[in-house]
Length: 135
Image (cartoon, rainbow, N blue to C red):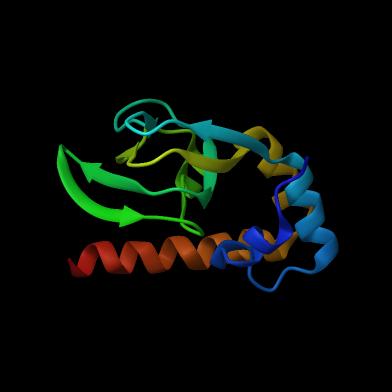
């Protein structure tokens, strides 16, 4: 079952993409269920995937300090799609969660074939960099 296209449309990274592009992305995504109390991703560990939260809530922490609460429609891991580096935060499920994941090896061909996805990614990353420098 592909990721819901309506969920993809809520992610700024995919804003402005046509239905065909969204459908291509949704077909490559995999559903991941996480139980309350489990880490979805762990700071410092390798990361190669991007996730969108379909249902449930989680806490983002950096160096053990709570930074933010997230819920349906939130997304994370877009940096891992590019650099395959370590996770910059830990995300722990507060409730049972359903997320949709996209791996770097599935994402790269999509970006190479569709420049608008790459440009959207650059805009999102630039915005996050500016916010991080302001705090």
